Amino acid sequence: LQPYDFHDDMSSGQDKYVLCAFESNYICDDGDLALPGKCLIRSPQRVTWNEAAKFCRGKGASSITIHNEAENAGVTGILQRDEAGWLLPA
Image (spheres, rainbow, N blue to C red):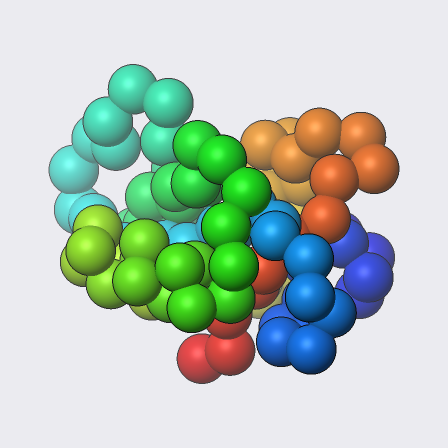
Protein backbone atom coordinates (compact mmCIF):
# COMPACT_ATOMS: atom_id res chain seq x y z
CA LEU A 1 0.00 0.00 0.00
CA GLN A 2 1.03 3.52 -0.57
CA PRO A 3 0.43 5.97 2.29
CA TYR A 4 -2.32 7.69 0.29
CA ASP A 5 -4.33 4.49 -0.45
CA PHE A 6 -5.96 4.02 2.94
CA HIS A 7 -5.61 6.84 5.43
CA ASP A 8 -7.20 8.36 8.50
CA ASP A 9 -7.88 11.89 7.28
CA MET A 10 -11.27 12.48 8.89
CA SER A 11 -11.55 15.90 7.29
CA SER A 12 -11.55 14.77 3.66
CA GLY A 13 -15.36 14.79 3.59
CA GLN A 14 -15.59 11.81 1.26
CA ASP A 15 -17.17 8.42 1.86
CA LYS A 16 -14.66 5.59 1.47
CA TYR A 17 -14.38 1.85 1.99
CA VAL A 18 -12.95 0.64 5.30
CA LEU A 19 -10.61 -2.25 6.00
CA CYS A 20 -10.49 -3.75 9.48
CA ALA A 21 -9.14 -6.93 11.05
CA PHE A 22 -10.15 -9.38 13.74
CA GLU A 23 -8.17 -12.05 15.55
CA SER A 24 -8.72 -15.57 14.28
CA ASN A 25 -7.02 -18.86 14.95
CA TYR A 26 -9.36 -20.55 12.50
CA ILE A 27 -10.37 -20.24 8.85
CA CYS A 28 -11.78 -16.87 7.79
CA ASP A 29 -15.29 -16.60 6.36
CA ASP A 30 -15.71 -16.62 2.59
CA GLY A 31 -14.75 -13.25 1.20
CA ASP A 32 -12.46 -12.40 4.11
CA LEU A 33 -8.72 -12.25 3.51
CA ALA A 34 -6.49 -14.12 5.93
CA LEU A 35 -3.23 -12.83 7.36
CA PRO A 36 -1.35 -14.74 10.05
CA GLY A 37 -3.76 -14.90 12.99
CA LYS A 38 -6.16 -12.34 11.49
CA CYS A 39 -9.04 -12.07 9.07
CA LEU A 40 -9.55 -8.85 7.12
CA ILE A 41 -12.92 -7.50 6.16
CA ARG A 42 -13.81 -4.68 3.75
CA SER A 43 -17.02 -2.72 3.98
CA PRO A 44 -19.43 -3.59 1.17
CA GLN A 45 -20.01 0.09 0.36
CA ARG A 46 -18.39 3.46 0.93
CA VAL A 47 -18.97 4.92 4.39
CA THR A 48 -18.15 8.01 6.43
CA TRP A 49 -15.38 8.00 9.06
CA ASN A 50 -17.91 7.46 11.88
CA GLU A 51 -19.69 4.69 9.95
CA ALA A 52 -16.29 3.06 9.31
CA ALA A 53 -15.55 2.91 13.02
CA LYS A 54 -19.05 1.57 13.73
CA PHE A 55 -18.70 -1.08 10.98
CA CYS A 56 -15.43 -2.39 12.44
CA ARG A 57 -16.74 -2.39 16.03
CA GLY A 58 -19.91 -4.17 14.89
CA LYS A 59 -17.78 -6.94 13.40
CA GLY A 60 -15.66 -7.22 16.55
CA ALA A 61 -12.76 -5.95 14.48
CA SER A 62 -10.05 -3.34 14.89
CA SER A 63 -7.51 -1.51 12.78
CA ILE A 64 -5.09 -3.32 10.49
CA THR A 65 -1.39 -3.30 11.29
CA ILE A 66 0.88 -4.22 8.41
CA HIS A 67 4.16 -5.74 9.59
CA ASN A 68 5.90 -6.81 6.38
CA GLU A 69 5.83 -6.85 2.59
CA ALA A 70 3.84 -10.11 2.44
CA GLU A 71 1.04 -8.63 4.57
CA ASN A 72 1.17 -5.44 2.48
CA ALA A 73 0.73 -7.50 -0.69
CA GLY A 74 -2.19 -9.39 0.86
CA VAL A 75 -4.00 -6.22 1.86
CA THR A 76 -3.29 -4.62 -1.51
CA GLY A 77 -4.90 -7.64 -3.17
CA ILE A 78 -8.35 -6.77 -1.83
CA LEU A 79 -8.25 -3.18 -3.04
CA GLN A 80 -9.52 -2.08 -6.42
CA ARG A 81 -7.29 0.02 -8.64
CA ASP A 82 -7.31 3.68 -7.57
CA GLU A 83 -9.56 2.89 -4.58
CA ALA A 84 -9.18 4.97 -1.43
CA GLY A 85 -10.58 4.26 1.99
CA TRP A 86 -10.36 4.48 5.76
CA LEU A 87 -7.58 2.70 7.62
CA LEU A 88 -8.47 3.36 11.24
CA PRO A 89 -5.65 4.17 13.69
CA ALA A 90 -4.63 1.56 16.24
